[in-house]
Image 1 (cartoon, rainbow, N blue to C red):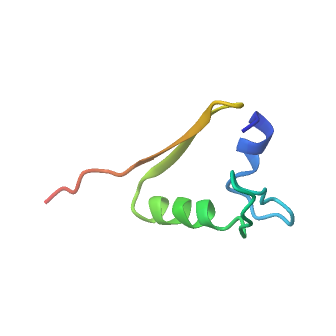
Image 2 (image 1 turned 135 degrees about the horizontal axis):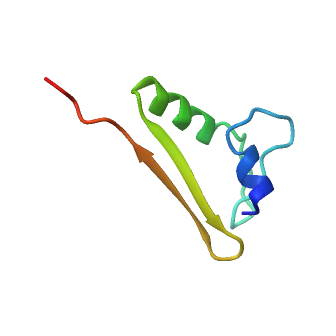
Amino acid sequence: MTEEQVKKLFRIEKDNSTPGTENESGTGLGLIICKEFAEMNRGLISVKSVVDEGTCFTISLPQSVM
């Protein structure tokens, strides 16, 4: 993904979704929901992407303290 595409990943906008690797369609809500769940649990989601090579998503959650 380009840097511009990465910046739009977690924003709800019309026509933000792009076709998948096998031309499948989506709503664009999946990553937004993942971000919300991570933040609700005091976590973070990060993205690293290289055009034409791949994208890596990392979700970090705090260790439970008892």
